[in-house]
Length: 103
Length: 124
Length: 318
Image (cartoon, chains in turn orange, purple, green):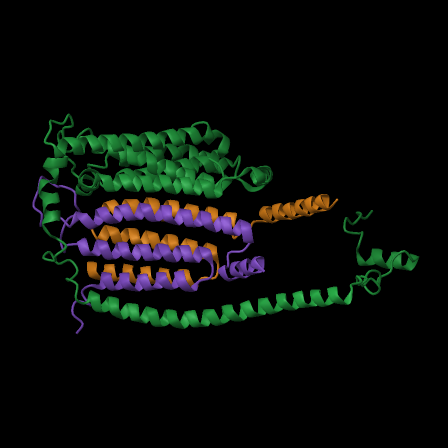
């Protein structure tokens, strides 16, 4: 029974890894990577390593995903309407600056 | 011929994950996908290491009821190694994400091919 | 009375009435306004044409090169992947079976760690006893790796003076526009959750030698609690207790204490001197000699690193 559970978890791990590489949207792939980390956590528990499980849950699924989300925000992969407005304002400012420097 | 291939299914999964991660790292042109690919490779190595330390029917390496017999627990050494590795891998990926943000600020794209194109133009 | 249409100016009817009045010409700016060609001497023109030609040929060439390179790299990758899978699976088939108690991995080292660990380190959790006592310098190096990574991210993402004003303006825009600055739901949830998360993290750190956990996981949990506080209450309130000086002082003090404490314990251990560190009763919080204090040090370093990663990614300064 445990063997079947282990194999199911490993197969879902591989499915997660493949769908990370195939997904078009970066946000989707980061969320799938979170699921990958959580599956990894349960595999650590089945391998009788609770230390690894708690560390993977805190570091892999928690902090790494937060950092990925902030990175996606910084590279404008997660677009909101407000962010678009800010970009427009910035572009206008840039044009303005260029015009000023030409003068 | 097959040997222990069917009983070592964790190692087989680790090998497949390693190759998938390497494919992500080499073939994707998006930098964020490359970072995720490297993380998957890390996880594959950890899975391989930890599965080597597992003993069928062993308990987790925390003393229970004063039992000091080595055959009662699983091997604690791979767990210690992997514990160190997980935390180092997060700092490595944070460093790579910082480099990605710097590249994006400079070239306004994440595609490695476009970055190479812009670099070539700058050289001209 | 009908409302005045705000989009009236520029609409079709407005254009029609203006056309009828003769103040609007639909062909204006479309037909006659081809920009006058600037006059160039034949030599200059030839030069420019050559440059444009070079540019386009360069781009074409690069595009072709990249396309060809991608195809070749894909083929090579598939070949290499098949080769690697075959070689690695062939190796795996000769490895000892999964869960085999007699495999060479379970040698006298792990036996010694398990059988003598409680006496020598006093830690109930064998993994913690191993990484913070027998292999403590390994963990010290790892904490230093975290510190160095933090420094590198600071160097890479720091808002330098040239961009500082721009970044500040942009930041204020972002704060005003879509940062959950005064989000009531988030703040009420954070008011309950942040203390719980931080206390759980402290519990995990302090019980690292008794139960699963330790400095790494507990530090990451504390860091996540701080990140939640930052997101809910804004940078200003978090900076009151977590600014650059606090983070620097905490990290450097923790690393220095770790280094000296462990050096002392190795020095006395290697020379068979009487050490003031005792293992205590196993299972108590203040047992296991130095492990509790080393766990606290590692927890501080990890929490500071995670928090400063987040805030550096967010706004380019701690």
